[in-house]
Structure formats: structure tokens, C-alpha cells
Amino acid sequence: MQRTVYNEEHEAFRKTIRAFIESQVVPVYEQWYQAGIVPREFYLKLAELGVFGIEVPEEYGGAGIDSFKFQALLMEEAARAGVLLGGSGVHVGLCLPYLKSLATDEQKQRWFPGFVTGESMFAIAMTEPGTGSDLAGMRTTATLSADGTHYLLNGAKTFITGGVHADRVIVCARTAAPTANDRRHGISLFVVDTKSEGYAVGRKLDKLGLKVSDTAELSFTDVRVPVADLLGAEHKGFSYLGRNLPQERLSIAVGAYAQAKAAIRFALEYTRGRTVFGQPVAAFQNTKFELAACRAEVDAAEAVVDRALEALDAGELTPADAASAKLFCTEVASRVIDRCLQLHGGYGYITEYPVARLYADNRVNRIYGGTSEVMKTIIAKDMGL
Image 1 (cartoon, one colour):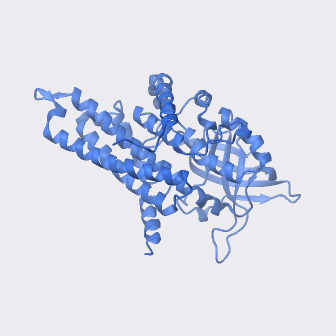
Image 2 (cartoon, one colour):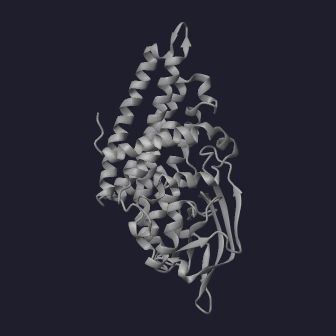
């Protein structure tokens, strides 16, 4: 079926991104994969395409287009090629909404120019060792100085995507203790300069998948954060985090759908070219039936994604809608990619083949941004259960 969620401008952007990935990423991707990180200068090249500034207001150097669809297209094209673009998705997809909605005009003037050019890459640090999805349980603290000019940041974060290359990190920290009736109270957001004394990048975590996306541990020891770098109101951070979760979860749904669609593409290519018992693997009825079933599931996931994209741009995507999209698309992707790997036989287990990397990359989709179990809880609550 013809997709209607994208217009001619979107499709022109898709062609540009596809050409860029084929010329600038695919030829060197194996080097990135072995190194486990994207070269820092790559972000400057990506920024030259205008990718980082699409949703940034014009007065701060961006295009001022208030739509998530361009980011969705970027995710689709990266998945299609079987590549990752490092921490760029976090930079735009996760950090930008906080900056747009919470930063003051003075802060936007300071941060957005570098954000758009890729000279100042952003990441966000929420998760802490031992707390996982329980953000209200965070122990990182930010204590206001006696003279009221700065905060002293102390604590640690883990699983921070883009944490190795980041120039600024949105850090969630406690500025007050939780109250008896509200353990979410007292969390604030800070935009921390990674060159600050006491700020340290620990291990670059060795993950099962997403090898090219640098994920790090961070620690803070009496890091001085100017009051001018408080993002939004003090103690209101938890409500801000909840406000942006629907878009974050939709982005995971989009990525999972795109990975599943890419897996079918890779399986079709492989089974048509691989000969067994004198005929292409694609000629066997089992192969046809498996790929047909995968196609049907991906078609359904596409419909869910497109409906959610329209809802997000219209300001109508609810937390339950986003949870439903994430749950459905990530579960579909896990099934489809597994079946497509099976059609590759033994070669599907070799990381030289894109489907093997997709298999590993996809697994985290049911964990981060809220586990599948958390998504079910959100949906059930919305149902009045």
C-alpha cells in the first residue's frame, strides 16, 4: 500500500539521506563497527545536511519545521542500510525536545548554534547504577552553593548513549529530597559542560548490539554547574521527563519497524542468491511462507507507526498510544528479524551479515525507553485496569 504519511519534501529528504549514507557511511562502516564508535567528525558532516537543525527555530539557526517525520525518515534509511549513526539520534530525538520546551531565550542563544552545526553534541543522563527504570530512585545530587551562583553535582550515571563524544549532557539530579507523598519531587535538569572539572567519562560499555553507538558510564565529583545552566524550574524535572517520553517511545517504535523491514530486504537478497539442492532458497515454499508472514507483520507495524507519527505532529499522541506503538512494533521486530536470520542459515549468525547485527541491535528495543512490561502497565492503566 502507498504510504501517505510522507509528502514530496519528505521523499526528497529521503533521497538525500540515502545517497549520503551510501557514500559516506557504508564504505567505512566496518571500521566504525570494529572501533565501536562513530568518528567525532562524522557529526559535522551530518550537520552539513541540515539534519540537526530541522526542528530548531529559525531565529536560532534552524529550519523551524515542527515535525518529527524527518527524524523518522533518517531512522528508516539508516536501518535500511544496516548501519547506525552513533549518538545523533539522541542529540536530536531526545535532547532537542527538552531544549525547545524548557530553555530560556538566553540559553537557546548559547546552545542552539553549536547544536545545529554539530560542534556541540548533546546527550541525556537519566539512568543510574542500581535504579534502572525507577528514575525517582536516583541518587545523583545537585546542591546549591551558599552564594546561590552554582550547584555542586555529585553522583554517577550509566547506559548513556552518546556519552563518549558529548559536549553537553542534560543531567537529571536531586536538588531536594522526595516528600512523604511524592518520591518524584526534587529532581531537576541541568545542561552540564563535559569539560567541567570533576566530570569524568568512565567505561565505554561493551554491548551485545548497537556496537557503533557509544554508550558510557559518567561520574560527577563536585562538578560546578552555573545556575544559568539549570534547565526549566528547580524540582520539576520528573514531570519534564514524563512529558517527552511519548516521542522517545515512538522513536523506538519507528526504529524497530524500520529494522524489521530491513531484515526482510536482507533475507530476500540472500535467499534469492543462495542456492541449495540446485535451486535458490527463495524458491522453497517454506521461504515464501516465512517471508510472506513477515511482510504481513511489518505492514501492520507500518500502519501503527504512521498513525502515531501523524498523532505526534498533531500534538495528540498520548502516553498510552506511544506505549502501545512501542510494545507492538518492538515485539513484531523481534519475531521478524529472528525469522529472517533463520532463513540465512549459519551465515545469519555471522556478524559480517547485516541481519546478524540487526538481531543484536534490535534486542534492546524491548528494554530501553521503558521495558515491554512497563508498556503493558501503562496501557492497562489507560484501560482502567
